[in-house]
Amino acid sequence: MAKAERIEINKKWCKGCEICVELCPTNALEMVDFKVAVKDLEKCIACMQCELRCPDFAIVVYKKEKE
Amino acid sequence: MAYDYAKYLRPGKLPHIWCAGCTYGIVLKSMIRAIDSLNYDKNDVVVTSGIGCCSRLPGYVDFNTLHTTHGRSIAFATGVKVANPKLKVIALGGDGDMTAIGGNHFIHACRRNIDITVFVFNNNIYGMTGAQYSPTTPKGAWATTAPYGMTENNFDITSLAIGAGASFVARTTAYHATHCEKMIKEALEHKGLSVVEIINACPTGFGRKNKFKTPTSMLLWMKDSAVNVEKAKNMSPEELAGKFTIGVLHKEEKPEYLETYDATVGLKK
Ligand SMILES: Cc1ncc(C[n+]2csc(CCOP(=O)(O)OP(=O)(O)O)c2C)c(N)n1
Ligand code: SF4
Ligand code: SF4
Ligand code: SF4
Image 1 (tube, rainbow over the protein chains, first blue to last red):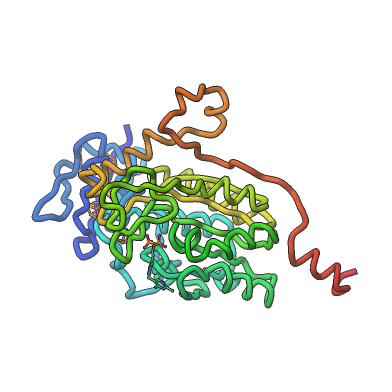
Image 2 (cartoon, chains in turn brown, orange):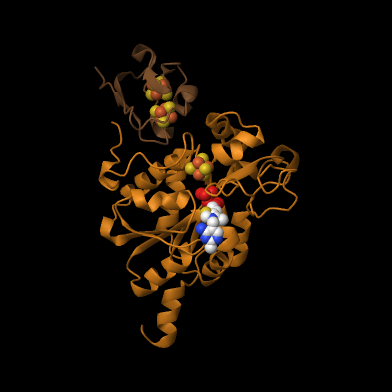
């Protein structure tokens, strides 16, 4: 399973629509004060669903290079 | 590796004006990836729009852009293309912009088969002005101007385009962001008038009052309702009830308007 090295969130641009949180297949994201936050990076499988469907350019997933 | 959109975005313009959960931002990203994959020179790309929420899109992208008047995206695009046929001209607009006030420009551009790429952002409503019904509002749906439910029949944009003579017609959705990118790319590569109907969600104007509690539920409606056009060929009308097809619905080679024009008036041997 692919893993993420880090997930970058631009809190200034995030509008809190929750699309990324609700589409994440592994429940790796959560809402904190109406903005998205990483709940558990270990759970992330780097499927890129959140990044692909964020309408606000606010979440970017950096995949871990294969060891 | 994460895709870097910055090269195509005008600095300092984001965040965009669209509401939380408006799917136009997803399509903007698909559009940028599609144009990038074709390696066009940014200076050769022109994007025109009319008036409406989606018509604010050109303001965010670093191409030659024209934000025009309501319904006139294609009219301005036609002028640009006639003046300089080497340019890649994209005309976009909402369902209201393209099929209500701009409906005549839409059908006549299809009829002429001029080499312009048209994107109709169909969210089934007039988003910008407060959820009045448009020609694509489904029968029975709520709109501020249809408080008891829409009573009129609605347009199928792709059938309208095919009937009017467009030589490339496709449908996709904001949910299918990668498919959307592919349809946009194919439309741009096609010579002649191409139309891509892009199903979008307006959670603020349409969703809230039509039993979609969240933006995600509207995206999941697209996921559940869209059927690939090839798969649909083997499905019965019963199986297709309540669904719509996505993919390339029509593609033909036929004379392009400007080529015919030049040949007819003797500009080209
Ligand atoms: C000549 C004219 N008539 C009416 C309007 C008001 N108006 C602004 S946007 C709009 C409709 C927008 O709906 P649509 O084209 O579907 O785009 P959306 O906002 O949903 O993206 C209308 C009627 C206008 N700006 N100009
Ligand atoms: S999809 Fe984008 S804008 Fe919406 S909550 Fe997630 S990061 Fe924020
Ligand atoms: S990349 Fe996939 S698994 Fe990781 S946070 Fe985004 S949606 Fe969830
Ligand atoms: S009103 Fe609707 S179409 Fe306009 S930005 Fe908001 S969600 Fe998008």
